[in-house]
Image (cartoon, rainbow, N blue to C red; front, side):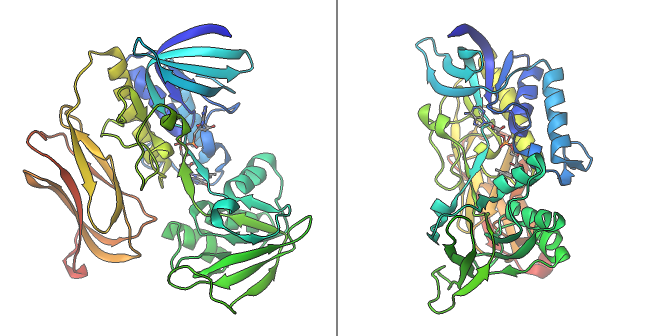
Amino acid sequence: MTADLTMDVVVLGGGPAGLAAASGARAAGASTLVVEREERLGGILKQCVHDGFGLLRFKERLSGPEYALREAARAMAAGAQMLLEAFVTRAERGADGRFSLDCVSREGVRRVKAKALVLATGCRERTDRQAFIHGDRPAGIFTAGLAQYLVNVQGLLPGKRAVILGSGDIGLIMARRLVLEGVEVEGVYEIKGEPSGLTRNVHQCLENYGIALSLCSTVSEVRGRRRVEGVTIARTDARQRMVAGSEQAIACDTLILSVGLIPENELALSLGVPLDSATKGPRLDQNMHTLVDGVFACGNAVQVSDLADYVSESGEIAGRAAAAFALGPLRERVLVPLKAGPGLLYAVPQFVDAASPTPVVTYFRSNSSLLEGARVTIRGSACGAILSRAYLALRPPEMERLVVPERDYTGESSIFVELEREEREAIHG
Ligand SMILES: Cc1cc2nc3c(=O)[nH]c(=O)nc-3n(C[C@H](O)[C@H](O)[C@H](O)COP(=O)(O)OP(=O)(O)OC[C@H]3O[C@@H](n4cnc5c(N)ncnc54)[C@H](O)[C@@H]3O)c2cc1C
């Protein structure tokens, strides 16, 4: 074991969320270390070579690697230390109240101690095991993120003729990427009656490239001994069950899965951090402070986000708050639950700390299919409506954001995010 390292704040994960957290913690005066398991900083953005990142944060249209480089440069210029190719195998809180982490790296095992932790471990992709596909398991089945890594980082093609299962954003982006690289994309098949990805990605990645999107359909079987030789597509009913007799064989050598992302929270669980069953991320307050004192979380580890800019915003908030916690003095939190009402999948944060006078950046998603004409109101149990906004349309893939300015929550026992239908003609905002 190499020498112990003692820091105010340790950030786990060097993606855009972790890097922004490190910048935030340094700006607030805390000694800060980022622990990243890969050899380069930037997280998943390293493989997202298309542009469109950073419009909110940097007011520029950047590619993923450019965005990641900016975040890394900011964090390093702020004085954050980086420990790369390092993996945390154990995290616990010692008797002195500090966190103790075992970090395995090329130098061996190093014990790192920290007064506050920021979990910025991102999310992982669901695989064919979670999508329940029957048949053989030959070579040629990839998650969309792995295909993205092969094409954009390794310069390798996953195959010549591909079927894409699932219409998540990474699958839509990869459908276009594969066509641009000369792969025949047979189509994108989605089990639900509507796309899982953003509407703009359906237009820009599929329609503009003549790639067919088949809704209410799924891959029922994979065929092939050594390599994928084809798949069977079946139609699905309103309850997502396959319709007998609707099967159709398609020849292909590659199956790409884009069937969802899950926040990566094994370390959070080992630290006893309660998770939200809807987001699969930690339950936390507006300072990204989880229900375990001193443990903060941000980015895709909290909820799967649409925009890297939002991920960085949450990182910055978490980093600053972790620094404030680490540098003390210790203060009691007064947690008021923030609850998502009917029609909403979830709302984040799940609590507002009434003892902390900070704005509340609230994110939510609707849970039904396309809802045309809606109003969302944030309401206090005692004070009534705090903020209200009309929407022309809400869809579950589009994450919405409302910022409640700093205010006094004393006297509130709950805060609600409520959704109501609204006539389209009445909508202005
Ligand atoms: C496969 C995939 C492809 C994507 N493609 C696109 C795209 O094309 N376009 C787009 O707009 N968005 C894309 N996204 C969304 C994108 O991930 C987010 O916008 C953003 O990168 C999330 O930032 P993050 O910092 O929360 O997580 P990440 O970028 O995932 O960073 C998390 C970091 O934590 C590290 N880490 C995890 N666990 C540990 C540990 N125990 N110890 C040390 N380090 C650890 C990881 O190595 C990683 O570097 C993609 C997401 C995924 C999962």
